Length: 315
Image 1 (cartoon, rainbow, N blue to C red):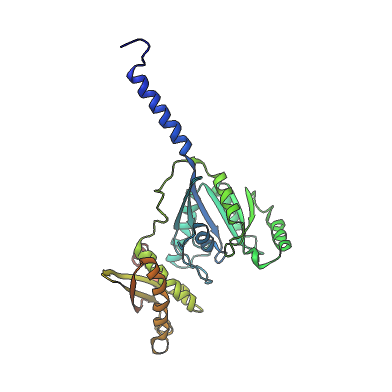
Image 2 (image 1 turned 120 degrees about the horizontal axis):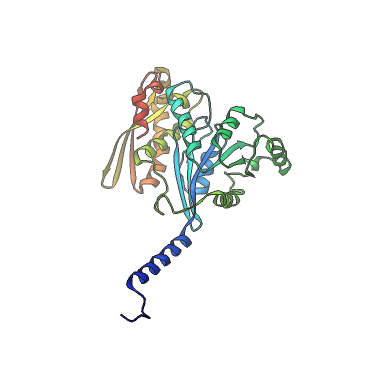
């Protein structure tokens, strides 16, 4: 071999260096972002808006989100993995204890925390602020629903909250009206570390088909139910079967008392029929085919304290 010719191992090393350079160029800002806040502040609406698809169910009832939901957004700038967490509240049942464990787990695992408040919020929550201090992560204050009030009201809320915590950023938004969502996304990328993507580009969520199907049905119950029913109702999917042209779904709706069952059944079974009709529209969009929904109501006393049922609902 001529002395002027590079040795094979030298060529190999140079190729490896080029590969590493290209890899670094491709690497974006990727990491985990926890959505934290009290119930009904619009965390799930924000997640669906920024993901540009329905990931998490939404209703005006407290404690709609019952488990940590992952939304995965991949762009040229990197990958954001959102934790949509249950609204923070005092737990009275094992179900609620599990929900609050998800919140604390998200705080520990996140690279960045978005703390959501409603623009009408006047309380300064010492418990949540204490949790944010313990987390030792950058925290954005996200003031949601600014479309409901004037700009001066938003400035008033910012002034009230700006010294409560050492916020990394304060961003007023409207998740529903898509105000300042792009700005918030830009800031999220700015604070995330340089990383390779954690998930494949096409991955949007890690929810199972079974879990998401049950949540779509529960969402319709929440839209129609009143008083205590949102807290005492859940949906257990018993069967999902592809029958050619039709997707068959059989689900049990759990309530805790006979009186709650009577409310859900409604006159001549109208309530549960309407739930099925409303759910079918979303399910047919999800499965991209005709769906038949078979709903049954079961009285399961104190199911919210049953570890077996709670673990089944997680699947």
